[in-house]
Image (cartoon, rainbow, N blue to C red; front, side, top):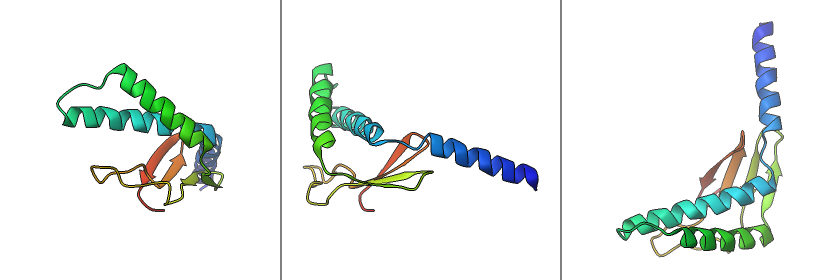
Length: 113
């Protein structure tokens, strides 16, 4: 029984230490956008250039860092949410996630919170 409690305590401490910050969210948004640029280029039958990724990532980094993003910190994880007026559907029906859960230095995007 004690080993289980110690193990749970260690996991809780690790999750608390790796709870992502707002800066981590901004970095994730840039990587997410670069990945979407790559996917769009593949749909068009080409490879995305480095300049496309850099410019797209820089623009998103600038915009996301200035957006009012609500962070709810639950110590072990955080929930980041954007105003639904900011997140508009793209031409392919996909959009930037309106909500992202950050846990263990990773993010999972959702359409709704």
